[in-house]
Image 1 (cartoon, rainbow over the protein chains, first blue to last red):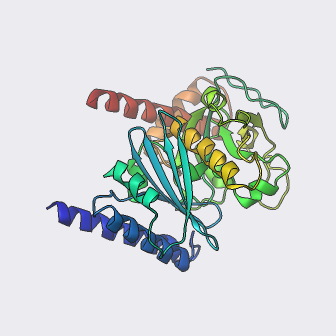
Image 2 (image 1 turned 120 degrees about the vertical axis):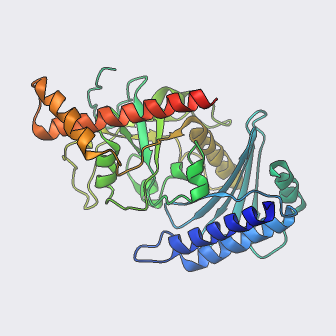
Image 3 (image 1 turned 135 degrees about the vertical axis):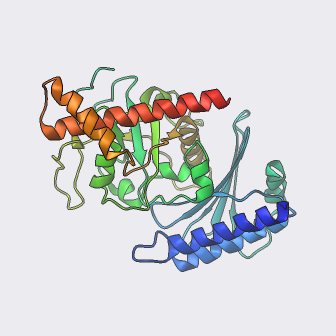
Length: 120
Length: 214
């Protein structure tokens, strides 16, 4: 049942990426949508299939923005056209900040994987 | 709440002013719409904002502009329906990462996409958040700017009522009639007041419902 729910959400996310990258006035390019899907797959696999689906939103200059929130922990991945993607983490209690560039398609860094553990 | 008098460009907004932001080209996923807080990217200045003279992030004063008016000024895009609401005091109270300066909120002359001054009804409520573009190009500075936007998103709430509003026409007619009975304002002004009153009532009802659930 849980697997079916996860699969449904995964498909909904795929449909969302299709919607925002097609049509008359797409918010992002097909390339950015494909990179976003690739990045999400890598994150999901690296978290052992336990990372929740991201809250996603398009940005003012064709970016795709993913975020995860769990209590004090906040993690983002910004997929920017023509640039490396950027991870950003903020601990709301300690105000600890962490950021790292991520080349989509390459393995996630040990630190990024460590951050994913906070949201499982 | 007393209606704020629109100020000149660059003048600080009065304390306690309620403002809202409609993101430029912000198209949220169903998962993002389930959250109470808006995504940080809703507060990311666009390349146009970076080149603008005031370098401010566009917001609207709720007492002077309806979200529906702000949405219309931005081109009525049916995909951009998310409205994030904030109090100016909360914006100013955000602790910036050192050595950044605190964020501010100032009046800003509304412009039309063709570059001319926007004198349409509701445009007087245009304002902007300052301080989101401070710092240089380094990674550390970029991280600090992201932290500011993330805190801004934490201080905001997504309005339960999107743009364009989905208020029943019948309810609006009744509200506008009662406003007309009080004998002030044009038909258009009465209609705007009716939308504002029903928007506020819907938000209030939504909050009460949430409190009951908790």
